[in-house]
Image (cartoon, rainbow, N blue to C red; front, side, top):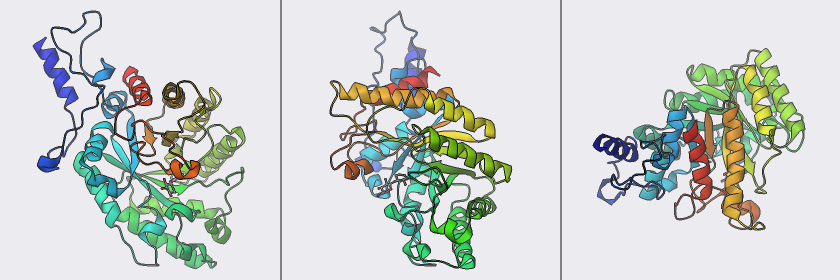
Amino acid sequence: MLIVTALVLAACTDTGGDAQRDGPGGSAFTPTSIAVPNPTTTSTTRAPGPCPARPENCTLAMAGRAAGVRVGVALMSAQLDDPAVRDLVRTQFSQITPENELKWAQVEAEPGEFDFTAVDALVDFATAAGLETRGHTLIWGQRYGNGMPDWVAGITDPAIMESAMRKWIRTAVGRYRGRIQRWDVVNEPLANPGTGLDDSPFRRVLGDRYLDLAFSLAAAADQSAQLWINEIGVENDPARADALVELVTRLRIRGVPLHGVGLQGHFDKGTAPVQGRIRQLVDRLRPLGVEVAMTELDVVRRGDVSNPGRAQADVFAQVTSECLDGGCEELSFWGVSDAASWLDAQLGRPAEPLLFDALLQPKPAYRAVRDDLARR
Ligand code: XIL
């Protein structure tokens, strides 16, 4: 029993690499759902043991590691000022995604003037904590959310567009070579709504080859990085899902160095996609030779059901289990806690779409995802 208790304690205190680094002010995050079993009261009917045999002793990252699944979270550098957030991120997750600060307009607001201060803070934190980083995002034909700089949107000459892309991709990917393991090279290539390719300035100026160019520039800048496309609104829309499968097929046939396809997974009505649709999509994509992940998961908490916490947990469980059943190796969530979500502004009310509440306490959705991971 002593050995078992020691194992459980070791599992529970696995807080990642730089747990000491916050100094005396830092407090180790302990998920409230993790109870260290008391040897005298441990039930004899359940197999005792550390994570994953006992899901309640797992964090998301621990259960994910045992199952071979990355568990990621999007955040902004200012959130690292809060020691409780730092502790939670390095304990619960195995990867971070800069939510906004690595978008082109944020880093190169004026041509040739690069500012990586905020991204450095995030990547340094991740590296010290032993977490991986998903680079988000290199080419996105949207101006909102720092997607594409205004000066890029105004380019009409193909040679100038190509050279702007070359400089940006080389600079960003090269700077984080070996520290950013995977990149969302092209974000939201499909029209939205629609099923064709988005009519972005990149495509208007360069034609469809802007896709090939973006991927080959990224590959040249870091040969070991995994290169992804990332798409919104495909999980419950068969026509857009078809369009995504066709696009990935075309890119693979053209020999584009594409390694992964991200399904963003924003469920802004709080409702689940039709049962089986995500699994079907994953099953069509993976045979094309790409990894598939849920990259930006959030599920709005509905106000019109009798048990909103349970309803939200059920949606998360359906989405994540279908993806994992199909062989997804990553689940990433679009925010740390309900204290702040991009969906708050979209809805004009708190969306509460994440796994932790505004006080960083795990919600029913947290337990649903963690227990599913621990079962695998
Ligand atoms: C969002 C951010 O969360 C917001 O803070 C920002 O104002 C707009 O962008 N798809 C994406 C993400 O790929 O980059 C978006 O992030 C959400 C939708």
